[in-house]
Image (cartoon, rainbow, N blue to C red; front, side, top):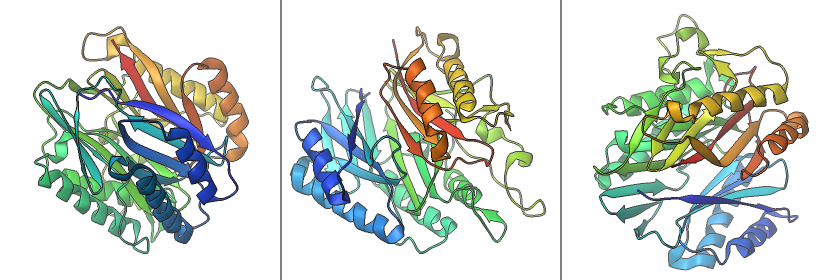
Length: 363
């Protein structure tokens, strides 16, 4: 199993083109890069599409055949104008790379792994449902072409424009969840669903990133949290929509997965059971969320023998920019040595002010 590493970089030039140059200068010496995920705040979908094209062109020009995959997320970075996560393999990893348009295959001893770029629809003009259906069709084709099952997905990121907005009494997040459920229904999920994040963006439509793996030698287990109801077991009362419409499907993800020696922590918020906690302070929600994650990565909660997880990256989404100083202060004081960054993004429930995801290493 690949031992993927991540580093976070920031840029603050006056233009998007200048930020791209600044970023690429910082990562120019990096080798074995798999993916570059960039966070920035375009004004609208037209600017998003233009920036994505420029970003891909810049990366291709800089790195040629060794160019990493690219994902562009329309979320403002709260400590700079641009943040970027670089995912790479350490030099000592004896892994073969097979690069394709839109994804990379990694082959090692007893496993094959697939990493996608940010999968986007051909047009941002369609509804959230239409965009989601198209993206899952693209993803299904990539998986089938390389003899992966849908249930081989172990980590998924789902970015949804205006995630809590309603159109004809249908919430954007619920429309996405229903499309995901239809896609997943063609697979058998005997080992549990992927770890996943479903988070809002200001624009950019729907975008999905995926990791998938197959191979008998791979440690790959779902992780529940005893403090929380599994999201795929939520009741109808916490799903948004009209009470008289057909049953709304649940978000299909696990609270975390351990794959190899990494715990992939799903997007986590201040929820106990299936109910949001009655906290209207963003810093307090951050503290509760990190306590929930602490339980998630505790040695006794991980389904293989470990000494527990050590955080290797924390990505914090903050609903309201005005809450950023108190959230950042809490995170920096309590987790000073963990690589992390902060983004402004709408969370899937109106009362939730913060969501946190990340990775942890286990031994």
